[in-house]
Amino acid sequence: MDSVRRLAATVLLLARQRLELAALDFEEEVLRAGIALLAVLAVAALGALCLAALAAFVVVWWWDTARLQALLGVAAVFGGAAACIAWRLKRALDAKPPFLHGTLQELRKDGEQLAPRAAP
Image (cartoon, rainbow, N blue to C red; front, top):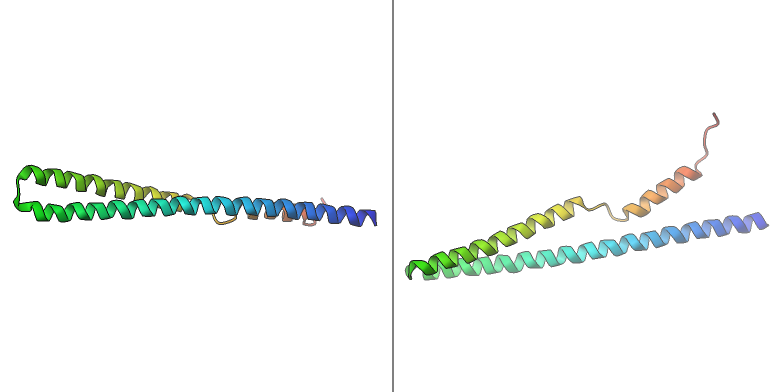
C-alpha cells in the first residue's frame, strides 16, 4: 500500500508542477496580449493624428508655403511612427511561441520518459 501512496504522491506532484507551468505560460500570454493591445492603440492614435495633419494640410494648402512644409513634416513623422510600431507589432506577433508552448514541451518530455522502452 505504501508504494501506491508514493506513486499517487509522485503523480500529484507532477500534475501540480505542470499546472504551475501552464499558469506561468498563461500569465506570459496575457502580458503579450496587453503589450500588443497597447501597440495597436498607439498605431491607431498615431494614424489618427497623421490623418488629422493631412486634413489640415489640405485645408491650409492655399496659405503660406512654410505652414505646408511644417504640416507635411508633422504628418510624415506621425505616419512614420505608426508604420514603425505596426512593423514591430507584426514582428513580435510572428515571433511569439504557440500558446502553452512550455507546458506542452514538458508534457511531451514526461510522455517520453514514461513510455516503455525497447530492450537492447
